[in-house]
Length: 607
Image (cartoon, rainbow, N blue to C red; front, side):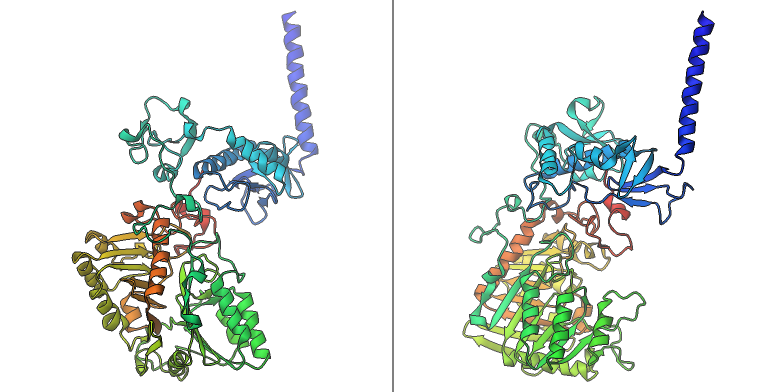
């Protein structure tokens, strides 16, 4: 009896196996193995059945989304989610998709996958971790996370066996980790001393500022008589139209944007569209600005004479490829590629426009989708003055005639009184030796404060003058760009060693400003970084504005940016493309210039 039972069981198993084999053989053309999972919506499928990753293997699942911990949701139903909640949701979404697809054979169906005879899209949407464009699925995600007590979950580092708060940078940087409920933490694990110091175990650990424009997370400024808010550009328009300064905030947009949405871009677009006779401009970078380009084309069609100057790029890899498009359409141009030029190592780094010999548009912004969009931080100045335009035109004509760098002459009259409260000094490198002859002198006579938002600072004379200012009691603060914070030439660590407060920004965009504000009196803004090359080699332009109200307003913008950056970055420097630099791993930009973008960069490891 036992033998008969065993024979029937073996026969059943054999027939079942045979049916499975026959089914797979019958359907072998439609089943494909999942080779890798880049993200829940980006899957590598063995379409060619050769178990090799090639150009046909990536499959993107369109119109399905999941929460990104570093993304801004200010205008959606997710705007109230904390960073910890977003981080938890992203981890769970990735983990869920990984468990669904790992080592599976699936079918392809349009932009969907069939997993275990079920629609992959449907499985994702029903999980409560993914959403589409409908309000129903978005609210399902909110409902899912609302049932989670996020304070009960921790990052568990598999290697170190330490556990961390969900917003702890040290935990997030772990190469291998799990998110575990506190009840599942093993007894032998130890706490992270960085985010869980013994004396604060009963207190709620304050969240890092990891969302864009979240005003509730901005600390009160040291100087309480200034509001700590995002300044509207109209706040710093003064002098009855003679002079206007525009503030382009750091990472007010998550990615570079080619649309002309900021006031700085709209101002430039409006000036081009209103020009009647001439446009002369000298620019270092022009790229991905279709509205500006179209406006220049239209100006040319209506008879406006356009001349322009750019930096010569001798590399095969063009950093600003649209410069070539300008050359094809506006042939009246010059570059600084002069064979007998003595200062061949200098660059033409100016950023200025002259409209109808009457209006000047200048500042630190290149004409690019990174600078004009609100991705990078910049200042722009507009001056309506024939005298100011004449000074810039004299400099322009020197370069247009082939004289760059040290071959130029000093522009004679460069100081203008726009009204009784406003004086401006217009300067050009390298002949004016701006740092040696002007900036250091202003720093040396400062008494109250010196605030510097800057892309690159290397000049030793500025180092010494700032240290001296600190020693005589001046409040000195510097905001440094993350890319250049890791250069061997930067002096910001020496400033820190001297007791000067220096913060390195932790955002995807660049701290592209080149500015100094002192004592509610001087505002120094231009194209020149605080470097030896900017002072002695490059073609640059800088304006020193002497106006109390303007400097007070620009001081507000500095303090806003200062408080936007966590205090921990006074002591260390985040990498430009890393999970510490907000948005840098999801912006499609090579932020640290290492030819690796987003998740391909080692700094952007995410669960």
